Length: 147
Image (spheres, rainbow, N blue to C red):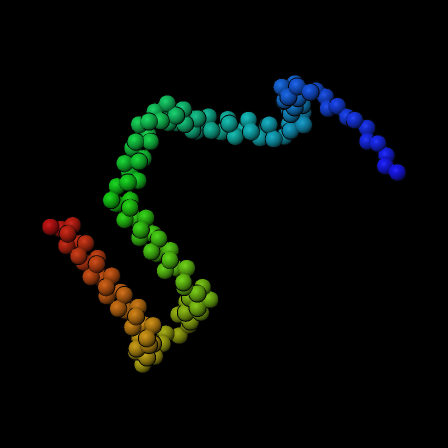
């Protein structure tokens, strides 16, 4: 047969009183964390970070407008696109292969024949073609800058 469960009333029933009780208990319960927070706050005050944040919050519309102008500029869009391209290229490089190549480079230098043989591989030709294309792109950019 089932046993009846006692009805419990949680005290205090008012959520504000419960919050006030928790706030009053917090300093004793979390004394170490409160002291650490005061220490961080003091360091932020010493370095004038709090004043900077107050100024930024006071001039929020101006700051947001300047940041939006900066982020939407052509240079930032190009920088973001180039970063994404570089990231996509780097994620495809096998770190173990790169480590092996760098470890091998620390030893005896390869002969001229070994270098030529490496450079005639399909992957090396692909990389040299890309490097030549990059040189053309950089050269065009330098030509625009000088003129």
